[in-house]
Image (tube, one colour):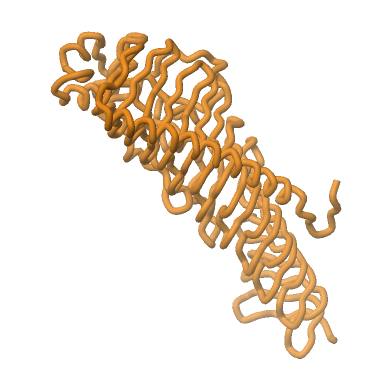
Length: 395
């Protein structure tokens, strides 16, 4: 084996061992104009173990195979770090991705560079999601737990949302979505809180009778202007029968945050919430959204059991309010379209009653399944945290 300095036509250089016309042994290779550098061991032209620094300043330290990151390694990219296993250039199977400036992190399993399988995600405010993942998104069964309301992230706008979570990235390392905590709530509310006390007067006003007579509903409200758009300021308890649940839409691995699922005509107005109140959702997720059966419950006694679609009450279910009153029936996009709000009066429609009961049972089963998935996710969380990195030992 020989060695020396080799200059390439593109301006890059290599200094180190050489065998049969290929880098072999130990050496340092720099890119054109000194941009980018790999330092470490080589085997017949391929990196084996070493560190690479990109022109952007991003780094990787670990194992390689056939020119791709493979084995154990640590990557730093901007304000984020990944440590764990790699497979043919992609993150996986076990690994931890964490922010270097907030508590945000994901610990669990990966596939093709995306969260996939089971894992635990912690958001910038300390809230968590534990459960199943698919393609970088919450998908399957899982539990989303907020922090106390007074500590939860205040959601403002897509442009001002602070880094809360890192889901996935393109092959060039550019982050596609950094605000998973914000994805749980619409602008103006708190991360992880979807049981908001507000009503949509425009939707409600279209109803012909029952809970949605324009006179009876609007008679208990006063309108105000907000950003040149109408919004509703509700009186406590008087409009809880129309309490809606909204959040922004995100497909974390493939798009930026979208407010397409929020009714922008009326800004959500939150009833007073004690700073110590927390909220938990247990149930089904699809493409990062609460969809299927599930239970969302606040520590102050508010609770919804039933069907969900795109983070909204949609289908049959029952909402219990902190004062003990409840509404149950069929929901459409957070609005009760068939049913009754009651203290003691039961639903008289037998079919509706049966559908509500089935929805509640389905939600309870989904919540139980979510809790079992949490146990599996926590085991993956522990496994990911114990990955031994090159040159390091378990502490």
